[in-house]
Length: 117
Figure 1 (cartoon, helix red, strand yellow):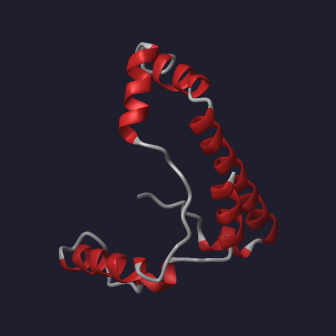
Figure 2: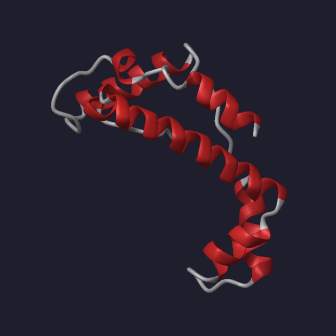
């Protein structure tokens, strides 16, 4: 699992927030396209960038599995809080954080639309 991350200042700027929404929708469209027609992605990424054969690139993509957007659920925050607490206790981050304040659901509708393709 990975997250799309934006700064608080970007989220608070209406023009940047609109650009982020647009990015989510375009990223979702790209993920859907990779699912339905993987060859152009495999050629541009695995073959052109890493010099793999088309077959090897397709195998890696299949092994990785399909990427998609999911909505943030309330179940996610406690797990992320545990991880943040672990990092804080190990000295990897300077201070304890409240993970619930690090997630923003304002783009949930765009995530749903992106996931639906």
